Image 1 (cartoon, rainbow, N blue to C red):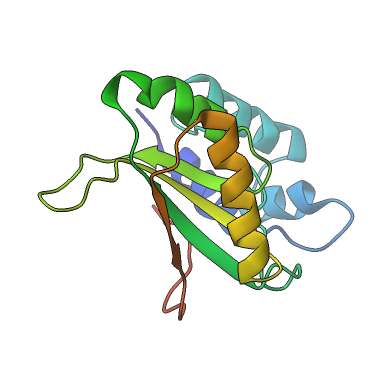
Image 2 (image 1 turned 180 degrees about the horizontal axis):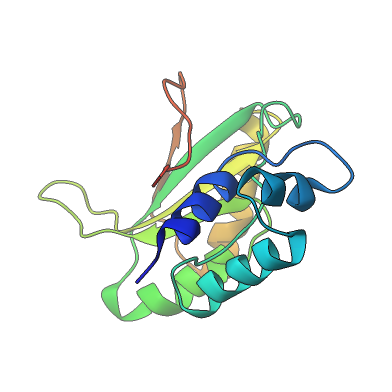
Length: 154
């Protein structure tokens, strides 16, 4: 169970951090508590499993990665777990997940990769393919970004 103060803390930390030397002190002041109390709340929310992770979001295009592709892999069911673990360890992979194949779509494991251009994405996918021994995959390049935000809960 979360209380109203937890909701205020979650609302603050799900957005951008203030660009100041002590961002948590600024945020704590916004909810009327000390920096130490705010950090204790965040740690407690994580410990209770309410927060899964707390991290930065890289805006890949601003960082020089102008190409990205969803790589869809056709992986035998008995290898999905191991291959998913292997693919998720590639530093170029930001998302890795499994979905059930659909009628005429055989792919069941998906990885989002980022590169400086299309060719680099193809090279990354080839390295990944060689490491897992799967050569049935397709790259789906992003054409246009319509929305990119994190979920906001409060």
